[in-house]
Length: 193
Image (cartoon, rainbow, N blue to C red; front, side, top):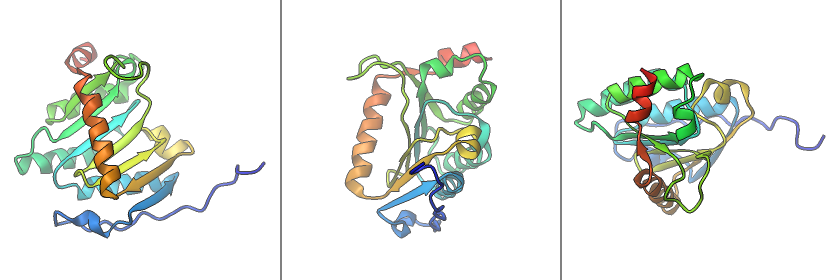
């Protein structure tokens, strides 16, 4: 069947850390498949200096070590609250998702801001099914993979890493619009404890 074979894997681009312009070493657009997605996201999270914005349908504790280190690093720099996570409201309340409950509670305790999207107030209602990351407002990561073990280890996924400033800016504005019309996750967190 045409298109059913695995495409060649693309190794993650090396990410240089230690400066505000670490992302300048990345190509304008890079595509990643399957196993490379988790490695690239880990590299980007490790390099983040200022902020991370994540939009996903669901998440679990797959990136827990990287997110913990990121939150500690940003808190030490006086940037508490600069990690913002937006997830679908139906998934935030899902009783069968222990990994997500654990991550929401931990990350909230570590200073991450978490909101749940209901579709209210947006052009389209329904599920928040997009998957995107914004790293330091310099790198946009768009693709099909949730921040979960299943997406990173079991499913066929694709991810684009984009450093083109106009695209990054558009994605940041899109995230901010969704953030504005979403609900604080406190109610969901109370239900989860």
